[in-house]
Length: 265
Image 1 (cartoon, one colour):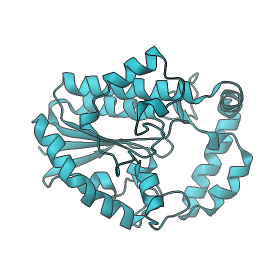
Image 2 (cartoon, rainbow, N blue to C red):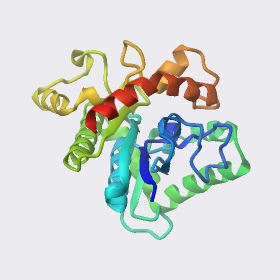
Image 3 (spheres, rainbow, N blue to C red):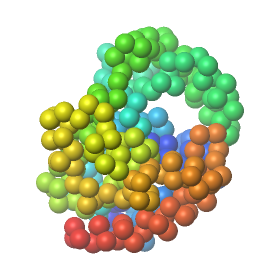
């Protein structure tokens, strides 16, 4: 049986808008994560477009318990702070479970034009249309709008993301599963901790619990994949870096991936 190579993340790991995108039905094989996988492994992609960091941690956690001793390593590209993973009251038209991921995109009708211009198929457009209609009929949309209008703030979002990262990190270390973390967006970490807002004792303590030695950052400014691709003017789809950015990111990541994973084996 082949050892499992587990990848977690959002659309930047799923591979939305890449050249082998099959209408969002299966994960791309042209992503940074697939490119890091050693030969002779089975690729298990838990990434889902639109996922926030708590949802990423939850899906990777499920994969860890599903595959157990067959796992060789885990790679994760953590996502944007402003996305929330929420357990809603059970509804047969929601996701397979009661969990749903929400983002500012789900609250602003002005984003519908952006959805219509996303490169890809009519199938993908229909999926977004169905998502909006489902969220409206199940109460997710007004719930999300209330959160972003009245409660969402950077402090809470950083807290939730760091807590999810530490939770998954500790599980992987407890189970002695080698792991490699990186980030899509650099608001997750700034180059210096003091640049974060509201750095109280709780946030300082959380930050110290994160093992930064297991992370890959793009450039000296601790950039995320998205910022790095923008800075270097890589070709983009509507909202995602395309094939060349992933290919070059793999070349940058590989030496650090081998070092970080090698030190854990």
